[in-house]
Length: 164
Image 1 (cartoon, rainbow, N blue to C red):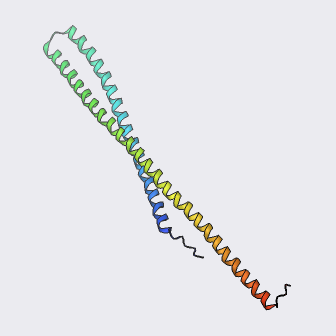
Image 2 (cartoon, rainbow, N blue to C red; image 1 turned 90 degrees about the vertical axis):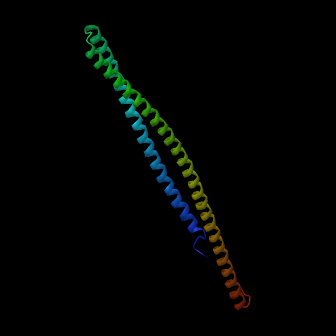
Image 3 (tube, one colour; image 1 turned 180 degrees about the vertical axis):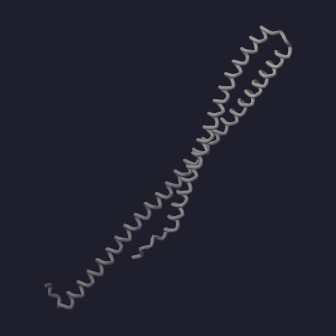
């Protein structure tokens, strides 16, 4: 009986592929988490900036009503314009980050599918190995049974055909 599974190398390769798949999925999930955290941070910054802009707009209108001095009004308008510009920039960054989150989600799904396929291949080979080992045991048992039968027949022949 050969105790070495003939597809052992393939089984080991499938196991390593499965492990690499698990690692790739873990990296993809980590990247997705980082992308989501970044998007949330941008959203928080955008909400804070929007609140600041609302407050600044109210202060500017109040200052405009109290003072008709051009430099004061111009500084307020310049400040509001800068806040609008920052808000536009953050909005653009948020859209870019949302696309990155979408791409990361697709990558996670692709890695999951790849891992599932690798796990199936590995499991199929494990099942094949189990069946092969069971067949090997049956074969070995049959060989041993034939050897025992031959031994018994030889003893019977030596004893002159008398069963003891």
